[in-house]
Image (tube, rainbow, N blue to C red):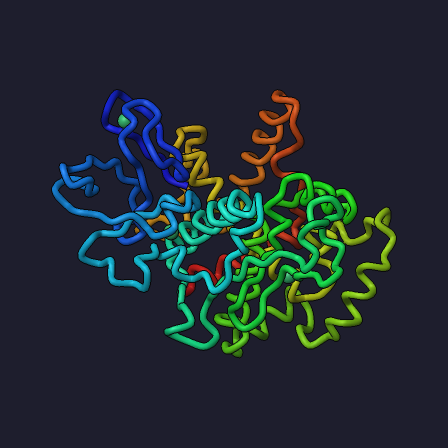
Length: 357
Ligand SMILES: [Zn+2]
Ligand SMILES: [Zn+2]
Ligand SMILES: [Zn+2]
């Protein structure tokens, strides 16, 4: 993520999620079209201006789930939704108490996802452009009244997943207690909304970029194995496994990645986004000097080639520092994963797919 600041005083940082500057209280919003976090002045009609240009808020801004802003002359999309919100096909029922807050958590994570994908210049087709284009479905389990007490019971359940560009996220994943309980039940080290989005969109890019490309598909098989293995059998075996069996560790980034080549790819793709986004944040906040890593250029940068060896070496060092910082605050490790040489080779393949476009 980039560093943003308000001009009201020296170095007043703004976060990507801000809706106003906490110092001067002017409205703030993310504009996908200009790729900038803008601070606005209101004219006498209450319209939003930035440097003499007129903007309109995303229709979901009044629902308090989005800080998106659209240049007025471009606000012709249906219902004036911002770029991130226009991918939504299903949102949760707002008649149910608490749903709006959970939906807001989902939108915040989705905006970060779309930001990183845009920076990496990955294609972002929607359903108007292709039947296999991206769309999002935020759905709640059938028994909503019980939902947050016994979450993710899979009784008339919504399964988080991806199919033909449609990404479905169970609303319970946006509830901190429900998600934490699920993480413990599944024996996972890390479970976040942003992680879900980054994983599921990995499946989308496998379909979109790897599957149709014979050369990439052959290279994929060398690193990840045969994608045509029975997914159903793999799923059953995974959920029956002994959680204390750590024999997957030398070859996979997570236990879930060891389930099937598709999941290995999606997990590795998610980590690629974790790594590239967090490295950018660290650089933008002047927490690391990339010049110390052979003049490392990030894949998001507009010029130059990003060297994957330097990229992952830099990440391994930074992730240890991140964990040290977290431990000083008495919270869990930010990056509770071990990057083995085999995992790094898989990450290099993801890098090749991403930058090779
Ligand atoms: Zn300000
Ligand atoms: Zn929006
Ligand atoms: Zn998956």
